[in-house]
Length: 264
Ligand SMILES: [Zn+2]
Image (cartoon, rainbow, N blue to C red; front, side):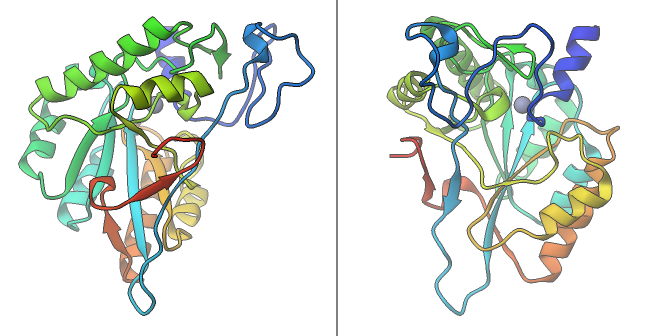
């Protein structure tokens, strides 16, 4: 149980390595390490932005929420429904197994929610054996394929449309895994604004970050941590954006432009 509780906290957290873990390069060249080793593989954390709104129109923002495992955050879900704010949710097979009530709400509002693929078991889609925030990565291309394919199968089995987007646990990949996932037919969902720091930020900071979203931003936050303060900040941030006249879009409605070959 302790391991599961820990994993639930590190969906997308501030970089921190536990003692003795392999150091991997994030967003940087791996020039000073031996080739062919796991540590030589640079990890990428792709960005995703929307095309800008035509001048004179309201700013557009895509809200994306990860449901890594655990429960559903009813504070956020009910706000999205009550305020009619559309969003894209990235869910794992593991989360889907335990949240029938939330699934029913999502299925009742297909106009508001796109359900996309966050993998089967919340294992980072990296095809070499490294740990990211302490989570062991898939470690091989076969394991990456399993994580992606079984995650997609769980989405459709729960009654949603076939996913078109994938976001792996920790939102980090290596280049070959990105290529592999694209070959499987998925765009990879980076983000441009980390709204809740892996659900670990306080309410005030989370509110401030989300309320600061600008035209073209793709916001990432979590909808699976109902006991965390961050969720209250998410709700207040969403309401602030709405008051400013922000137009909320789902990823399926827009041409997201990702770097590192993630969308084209
Ligand atoms: Zn996650």
